[in-house]
Image (cartoon, rainbow, N blue to C red; front, side, top):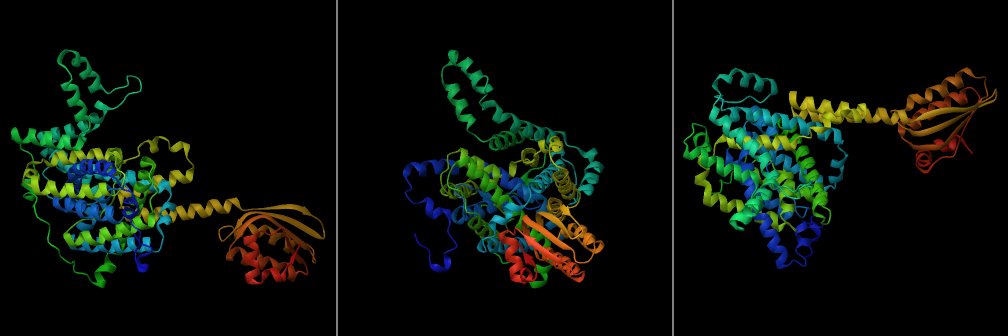
Length: 556
């Protein structure tokens, strides 16, 4: 299928994936989409509630954004929707600016993401240092876990504050209102999600999970039915098992815990109304910082997720620019239906790949599956305890954090440790906006420092008439001070000195480096000497030729 000329940069992966599409592939995509749709339901509700929104905001974001990202994205198997990384950001924006401004900020972030993709800047996201990514990921995980303590403990806190120290203070001051029933449900959910996959996981020593080994012992006495049931159970996602079983447990025992129904009154079964946010230039300027944060985080999360999907699926690599354009359109549209920011989601994407997905059709099926669930089962959601959803988010935070990086910090350089720990503490204590800004600025400063240390000036020979120097590395604005020793030699030497610079190992030269060489040339000429440069590489030669500097000096 050929797109019009004006849409040439816009090439969704779905177009190429449908070429040679077979019934067998559709069957796999259908099964994967149904599985991911079931997994996405509790996560979408939990992310929205934790962000200070209604559960339907998360569900409809998963439906609308999930469908648009699958339809228009640059990855074959990535699943889009609300993500845990946005919880802290969205909650803070709602607290500081209000829900209407969150919608405006999300739509503006969508425009930025689309422009990043349209201008083919998707590859720039990969330049964010991994130490910063690890630092803010771990920081977000800590904040997600902290924000869920209210519902896990069943504390009677009317409104949780947005900042770290205020949350700790609020939790500490309300510890006398702990609800043991909510605590039991939350811990049971968290521990159950840890244990569930291990029951059926393959073990290298025994070859089978605990549950299957146990059933095989019973098999000889009671036949194959129990074994088959166990194999079916192994395919059921843990969050669904926890959600259904613990909700039923709380409902039939009439446990006194807060539920979706008691807090939100339930989930509407109809599509939320289309409404345009009240845009104004003053509001857009006010929301510049949160808009930039949503766009940056969405870009980093989606492209990291797409890279993980490429590695797991073995399918053709994603198009980062197309993916950003799809993410931008999704984030621009969902606010019109009261949705929240969306991005690529690693947990659901991994589930999609492992379930056998081969094309974006699985993502479309996942969105349709959520629609069916909302239409059919929305009335049942009123009974879901908030402590269970909080337990799911505790598990998400546990899996989200790369905690081993703290243990292995000694293996890394001081620059890596400074960036990671600095970003982590700034994320936790302040917010992600400050952490990203300071982290990227610090990364630039440390990069300049490291690159400047690689430039060296070595004196190789000296006599009364001449002095020779060897230049190594890149002479740029961060390394110009390294030329000072040559200037000192020129100023203290007899008049008429011949200065030779061997530039065979000089890899690059910028405007500041050229300027300091110009100062050296003037100092040599003023004392009646000559400056000779030899062995110029291509890039330094071009810079000197364009500026006219090469015509002034001697070259050998």
